[in-house]
Length: 483
Image (cartoon, rainbow, N blue to C red; front, side, top):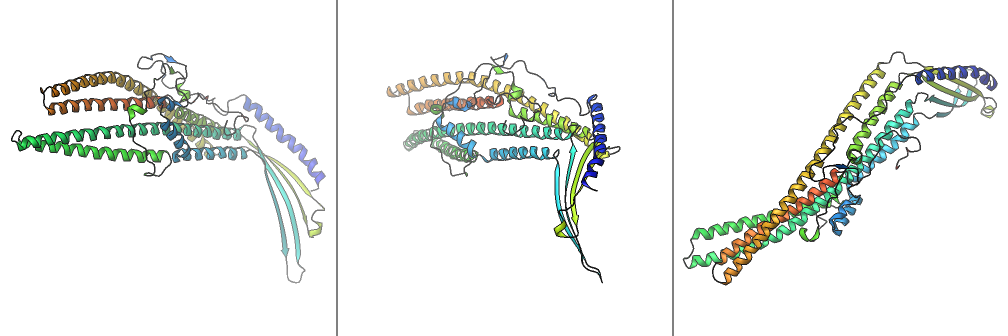
């Protein structure tokens, strides 16, 4: 076929194919062939929260750098180190890059495909000369996306990419919370170790008094043995505190991307280094749009809608445009002297394909599962916020009582020391009053650490300062990764 004939023959065929496509498109415009538009799954709503901040406010209550509210530069440095070096966060970042690359793969499905080939045939028969033939050709094929089937696939993969971005933000938030609470635990253990050593020294002094009394027949032997057992108990507790401190330090090293055992923190005092921040009044009404895990779950519901729509569009006819151009010659020097062109439009109507219906049912079931996971995530979020508010309120009330108890025991210890000077009481009574005071001070320390941990939990439960996200399908201009 000559080039001119190919063009004259292809014209009517192309017009007929395009006419059929336009007719089918007009029919499609009258029906929602890809299924319903995306809607956020129904879930229980919250209009108020426990505690004094009852009404839900639209205010942004959490700063993006919320950990700085604790006022500890070393914590700030550890968080920065963890964000840069944590391997769990790097895994999430790598998954985000994979999802971004898959957007390009989905787009490629709707692009023209160009193939170029060349060949040669050499044939020798008995009694004849060797015959030869040279071929050079190219083919362009393109399935027209008149229904938006490939576009639905791109939208689905874009939704998955946005979900992986939200997964990264959720991992970031979890990491910062873990670094903060582990750091607070180490400082608490440091202070407990100091107090445990003080208690051990006091009990050794008590043992010395009992042993002196035993030597003069003023105390029974059982009292000395009992005091030695108390020293054994305190020594065991000291060793356990050291073990817990080492394990917490190893956990912090892993969180910051350092091999366990290679990062050491200088001892510190929790009460001196970390202040209790005031949680701003008012809780954000956009909790569902702020928490990264909820945003990720909603994007995966959107992905399910898009995949189900793509599966339904596969029931419609597909139009394939194929163009071929080539040349052939018996001599290599004559290869470029003549050309053959052809244009082959075709339409494929799926009359019976069980795989299409099976795919539709599968994607609809997957969408239902994603919606159920979204609702579960929302319910967990509500519970975490409520628990953090309840714990914070209770611990702050407990702190008032513990501080008052400590103040009263300080007065008792002071009076007992004064009575010792006056000879009214014995040294043992002084030790006992100081033991009670130490227990109260450790209770205040533990309460301080619990309030800090509950505050971190509340910040995390509220979305950690991430801005609200509107979950929807994006246009071509919005679809590039990083936007």
